[in-house]
Amino acid sequence: MSIKEEVLSIAKAAREASAQVAKLDSATKNAILNEMADKILASADYLAEENEKDLVEAKGKGLSSAMVDRLALTEARIQSMAQGLREVAELPDPVGEVAKMYKRPNGIVVGKMRIPLGVIGIIYESRPNVTADAAGLCLKSGNSVVLRGGSEAIHSNMAIGKILKEALENYGVNSAAVSIIPTTDREAVGEMLNLEEQIDVIIPRGGEGLIRFVVQNSKIPVIKHYKGVCHVFIDESADFDMSKNIAINAKVQRPGVCNAMETLILHEGLSDDFIRNILVALSDQGVEFFADDKVKSIYPKCNAATEDDFYAEYLDLRLAVKMAGGIDEAIEHIRKYGSDHTETIVTKDYLNSQKFLKEVNSSVVMVNASTRFSDGGQLGLGAEIGISTTKLHAYGPMGLESLTTEKFIIYGEGQIRG
Image 1 (cartoon, rainbow, N blue to C red):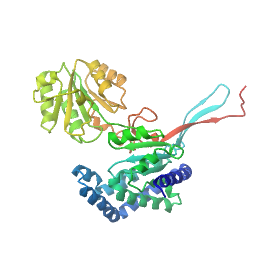
Image 2 (cartoon, rainbow, N blue to C red; image 1 turned 90 degrees about the horizontal axis):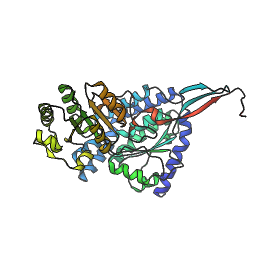
Image 3 (cartoon, rainbow, N blue to C red; image 1 turned 120 degrees about the vertical axis):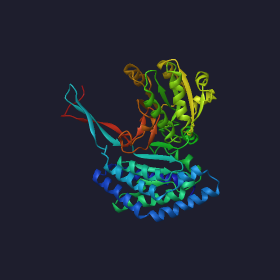
Image 4 (cartoon, rainbow, N blue to C red; image 1 turned 90 degrees about the vertical axis):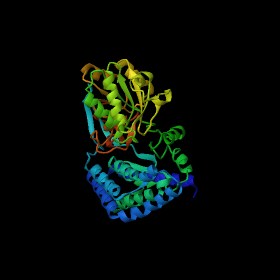
């Protein structure tokens, strides 16, 4: 069987399974999710053995220590996968939820009901725990899923998929509802992106290069998130300690994630001491600065910023720093250089906070809070399939509800249209 035939066969089977999964009641889906969690814990040794194959190959190929670390299925990460599935089981089921009922003048009653999207294709890199996370969210939202992980994690992903499929089979559910593309050949990705009749939406998770490739080559709608160029704007009225704590947390806690701050914008009305002390506090945490001339005149240890620095997603302890004449200039800078991910204003000025919320249209906009809260779990979604910077059909962290759509439902009493 060619790669094209194999991928098509997998997608067709997932499409067939989606009809069964869409009809599962909440109790059955929750029982399957808990069974998946039990099986993952019971198979910890098997998962570790398969994961070791990936780790050995990764080291042999000279992958970075950071990449190897992302691949590793430690005991804690295996437990976390199981716990994540249990947490999804505890979340409210969005499927079948009816809302917005209203009565028309002719007596018909109109409403909307949440339904699954159908078959979701997920293309991702590195971290094998995504296999379990994505499968759990798709199952709970009534969808089948076709998963294509990175070649560097093929043994781990196949092992996790095998365990998840066994749990489905134990409940009489078509195991194609969770399907793994079993080849490392990149041709499989291209074939997957052509299957618009079998797959309803593609969600890529990984670096900007992967996501741009998917967008440029997909015949299927893509929910994308190119990068996270997140901003913190410290307004003239901001409290120093709050500003310092938010800036350090947003940049330093986990600099390699998409909701970390990449540009700090400082109101020029702040005192030189305020600005200098904020930068010293960040510098003490190992942060390197790329700043405009106004900031450099106050803190000469900064590197000179180029235009590219303000577009950059560093994913490292590097930070672009900009001085703004006021909130309008800060908002304009975010519009030009931002990636529609997450922005924060630190301020005591209520009017400025409301102006920022209204005029900044990134997927998450905050007042006096760290950008690191831009996360499905932190925002009360329980879990997330990813963060969308595409305004259609979901925007921001995507939980269960984002993996569904709505259909109109109508109740009548024999009305006919004249």
